[in-house]
Image (cartoon, rainbow, N blue to C red; front, top):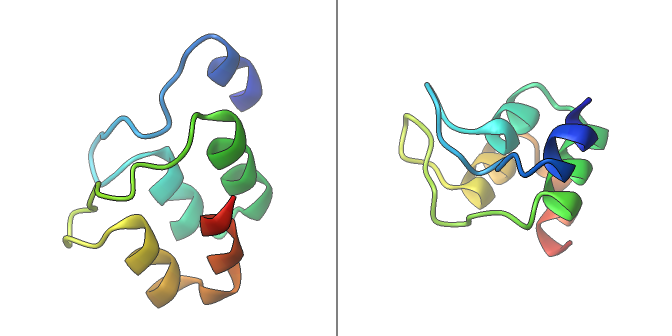
Length: 73
């Protein structure tokens, strides 16, 4: 379903409530989803912040360092 939405132009960087789809994938530790959003979603807005002011890289580093390799995709 996510792949279809991305093909139809959904923007995983679009902010809503407490972040965006990429930040939610980090929060819930959904590695396959995170890969999909980063690779097929047109990249990651590294400047966007969550409700606490953390960027993508800061979120991954503090909440899920094992997924830091995704930042290089």
